[in-house]
Image (cartoon, rainbow, N blue to C red; front, side, top):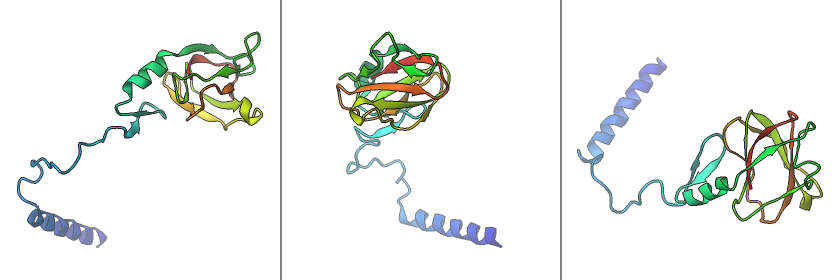
Length: 155
């Protein structure tokens, strides 16, 4: 019974659309509508990262500044004997990570008194934003819930 009503509704909608639109409506370009998607629109990228259309150069330069990381046995990066924090740069607006294997990761900031932003899953072999819109010159460190982790980081 429900299916019959649904089929009738779909048929009615199709009939209304067929009479309301010109036969060539699908092929007629509209000059009053901008191209889709508009420049500067955010779109999904691989995994949970996002990219901005028209910002490919920024994304390439951000990932072009990537560094290899290897956490200590407790899951911290950077670790002794290096400084116990990393400092964000102008190369990226976000902190991005590309672990070799999937891991849960949190970013802690010196400016927050060492408070962290909560664990986030980062799949293996793909870029994931683990902190977004981070101010240049911010000191931070990372903890991996799974313990040791290796991969690449861009910030």
